[in-house]
Image: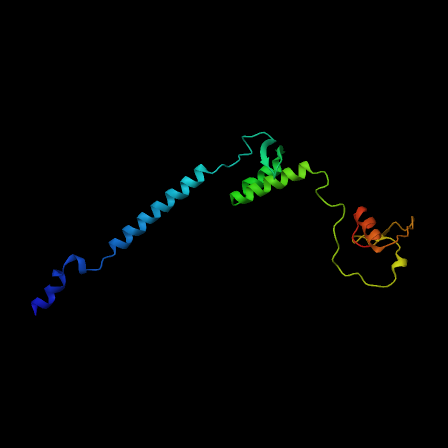
Length: 161
């Protein structure tokens, strides 16, 4: 009976299960991953807006044109908040395109809301949402299309046409 009690403790080391080996592997993997992340964050080029002036010049290579553009503080903040290098490059490219192209934004945006067919000649003006007063009733302009009336109301910065 004593042999039965002593025997489990006399097994060879290879056959014993231990928690030490998985802990050591976990620690080594954690250290390796931590050093890789630290290396990546140190080698990635971040733009520090506090140490730089308000405008920064970058060389952006387009398809066949090389040009230099200046980035403003808002663009620099957006680049700093971008999660990846791809997003940072995309923000820089779009900012440079906006600065270099005079008609980058369209003059009007398309409207995809359905418009009720009916009395288009009875347009009286623009209505503000705040005080339900009408704008343009004293000037009574008749527009050829409903889009022209909506554009006119948008230029007045009111809610409804």
